[in-house]
Image (cartoon, rainbow, N blue to C red; front, top):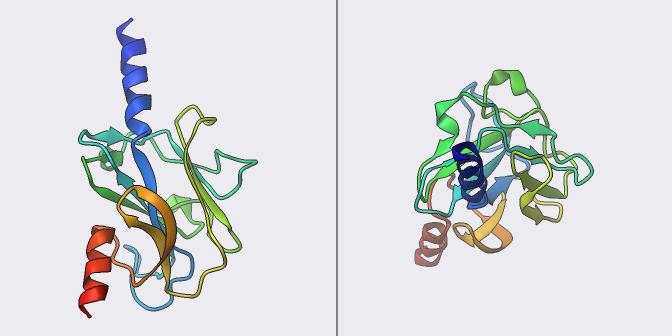
Length: 167
């Protein structure tokens, strides 16, 4: 009985995750841990509890929701309350937990799926984007996605907007 409660709680927590921001063509600035400039996807934990996303999936294909399974056993897949986590869409999954086995080239949507491989937790569609322009939610985890322009991964999106207005 306690196993069912634990699984249910885990699924509820995973539903607190949102695709928060993403960049399809990165040629100017932000580099991964291998010194490469690649597309990236930022997820945000909207809850006030830690969420373990191990076993969940990221995809760009609605007909294949399980394109990339977030590996189990990495303590870094436990996303702290109201925090961000970044994945590199470089097509080189063997570089580690946060390097996806697909790219965003030609993609028109992102899908975050629960560990059951069927339940879509979050999905965003997007148009063709200019190089080095991110797309995401104006307020972290809230509302629909739109072009954000400048990007600062792991910072609150609302701060980006405030900084732009100040400039």
